[in-house]
Image (cartoon, rainbow, N blue to C red; front, side):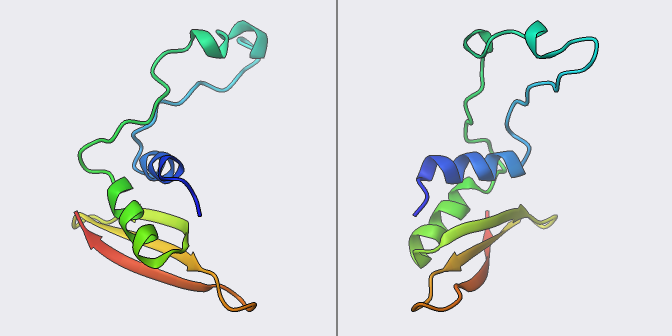
Length: 99
């Protein structure tokens, strides 16, 4: 089962709340960028309006593995999990959780 930190990071990245590093270009190759230790604020922090708590709740309730999280325009979170089967294919469950 994934850790709550992984779930929060995935949900946060889907909601666009993570700081992203720029990709290397010909003008600024890998060696020209600062070392990882020098980069600040790479932690995922809970933000008002993300679905991380909804994703954690669904994973906790179902005991499944998080597959996807999506926020709808009406303020609900659509969380999809895979629930392991009895030796067969896992069951895909999608739940809508109000924020």
